Image (tube, rainbow, N blue to C red; front, side):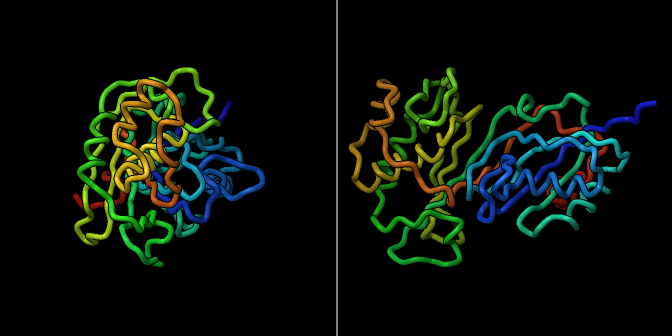
Length: 268
């Protein structure tokens, strides 16, 4: 008799600085390959994980859903505790649950929220080196907010992607773009972008464009021009990866028999 298969959904957080992105690679350390090795120590026959989103080298995540299939009949709590002891401190398992055997987090993602942090300072801060993009010029935040409003809605974002993105469908729905100072550190400015799907480097191009408008390197109206022309040349730079974090992926299915009941172990 074939062993019973279980499909496990994990919510993962990670510091992206030590890794060359999320997706598996054979010649570089990645988040996925590190988790795969930890799972293989528990079940060598388990499948490789599939994530809801691919993040680039240096990009962080606070809620990245991943799924894999295992022959082991291990409770959700057991997966969380066993993987935690086998993973570096830069990767945390926030939650585990059981899902249907054909569950793929990419198909169940309803929307995603990214947060990009900018350090407005003329000097370096070593505590934020891998967490924020330091911009030394003064930023006109009101001008940036005006530019950001043009992004909201359903548009063809063909201009807002790097050359490596070969997808033929480039229409996306941006639900919200919000700029807000960080209460604990007024030097920092967060840009949150929430949408149904994203193209390759789309958020970093959005941020780079807003910053270039805000510091006077790019004429206002860049977003509208690029949405009309569909040309990358109408936009600003691609912001560095270190300031970017995948904050949340909303799923339509969160699984059963979850542990902890709340992601991250927050008390009820």
